Image (cartoon, rainbow, N blue to C red; front, side, top):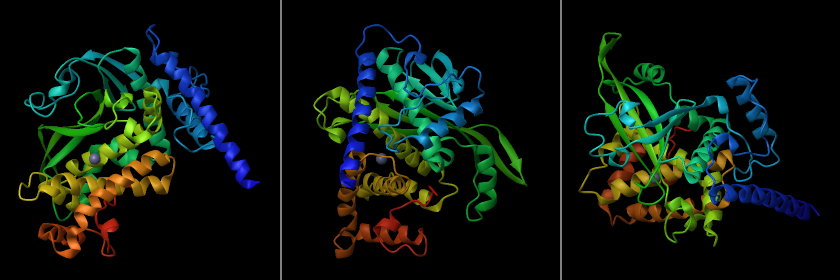
Length: 383
Ligand SMILES: [Zn+2]
């Protein structure tokens, strides 16, 4: 009886989710442009006009907490419309400050005018205002809203950072390495076709003026944390890349919409853990170690496998504690982690000396209780 009840509930959630997705499908495949993002409706929309930003946040939080499901796929919530600002169609450098060579090296894909939006201090770049891109924007606002409520550690520590405050406290908390930089971080989520598969990240540090805190010189720099989501592979029609290998639907739009409601949340948190590693070299010894080895040509496994294994393991542990991420996504990344682990745990038959050295180096940078792969290939940041 109990089983039947759960089965019925699951069926209801699936049917509900499916009806939402078909509504969005109409928008995606409609020739008439979605001129205004507010035309995208959710079943839980409420009148935000007479409410403050804070009151809207509280109401959305209640909607998420009181929802019949905690599965992100089925959560149907609006975003906070008062937090969304359209900056305009601009070259990124006319809005945020980047270093001289950023656009000829790391950020070649953003060396053009983008449609720029700001939401809760996070910058979102889309290529145009066609329906596909407006839907990308809408689901990013939804993902950020869900992350802020359900994964607050990731949101506050990785994505929305008050850097000047954090940097000051880091200075006091980090006796082993004094940072020479004080960074103001700009988080950027961009939809473009730069990633090799589904998402990728890079940073750009612009050196600013010198300042002095407690007798030490620091530089007030701007650090742009850029994560890109591939606007082609997410569409769900490529067998080996993007959203299709995760969800495996025949209808490409099903892959796309499932990804946008669920996998996107994973992609954002995942890429911002990579960005944390790059960004925290002066305050986190493990990040420093990983970062130093990124360009180590003697150790081919280091760059790709070690960092990826650490990010996958850190994220998967976090999602399992918090819940909400679908079985499909967990399973997909669990398998990826297993493959990495197989490469990296050749350690114990001594067939790979570098693996062994690295294992003990990472162990020395982990909690004293860390005793296996799971504890050592892990960043203790999301708690
Ligand atoms: Zn990764």
